Image 1: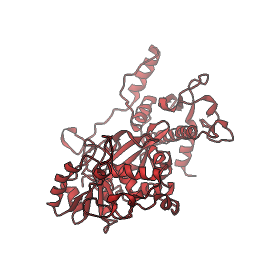
Image 2 (image 1 turned 135 degrees about the vertical axis):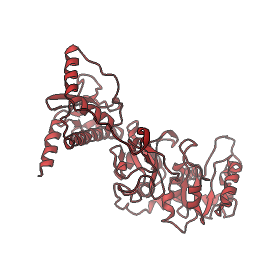
Image 3 (image 1 turned 90 degrees about the vertical axis):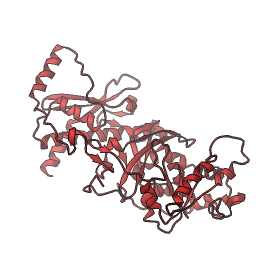
Image 4 (image 1 turned 120 degrees about the vertical axis):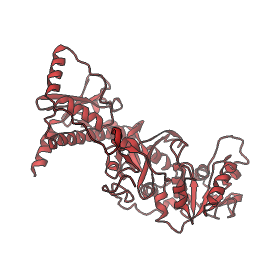
Length: 447
């Protein structure tokens, strides 16, 4: 064992997690440790409260073994919640080790407040809130320790007026943030739970991995994670984290997290569509473009004859299809736009503009045809109808418009019996922690 490993092991043993109020039916969890003779207490977020009977005070972790925790039997939601608590404990432990190692490399004998503030910054929390003291003696102790701290050196940025340097994409090392989970966390996301009602889990995992999706471990909803959609070409330009209702598949919230991952930079990302990095891999496939990234995944699971892309979930967080960089990537490809019902006419000028740039573009009226006999005013997409058809166990080709023509953009028998298709899936291959399409760490951030 190396000296560094011994130090990490020693420090890890110093980090303890315990219940703040063991007598309460639901109590917060806190981390305790002593650094340079100063005690540090750090409370986990309120979402990670736990019942004392589910806590192992010896190990300082939630009990996830059903032999020791009888409440886990027949209660998968509790298991996910306890797993999330242990994941948060591991994340904080690793962050503390990284913070202490950084102070050691800089030759700084860190005080408790320095460690606490740096830990809060690493975890994306506000470190500059007002400090309160229990009594005058605690204030004196704080003041003395602050005087011992070395002066903070001013940082000279590469831009004038102390502006942050500009980044055009999310660096690969930032994608290894403790906030993001790889393929192992797919099944704990709300979108995966919803899609598993319709498609085989192996197929969902393969499609998630193909598009480079990541689990957002800090965007929780009822113990389930959000899913982060990467908008990328040869580099990851933005990550849009989205939460869904696992029962209905309706979106309940979204947040772009690229800027938070690129802390210290001003992220001014170049535009890219969801799935655009696959254009180079599937050169012979016609392209179908939707608005919602979720719909692009559903159509990929249902129709593998096309490469499905998405512009984004909203005008605020999405990208324009007529952006010059996006049109250049689509040049010489056969492209079909699939607007939601009621948006066919609004999509025609977009198709005309792309045609002027030598892009073979048509607009599908499939959603319009499907809603002709419906009384609801709700906008529907072709992905909505695919899910409805799976529920009814019908063939997509049974719809009158399914025969291929220029207006519908649908090939005959494209969506043949999806239930049989899902039953014949092959095992999912081993995937890397970070999708291979992400850029190397040492590439220029201004490209």
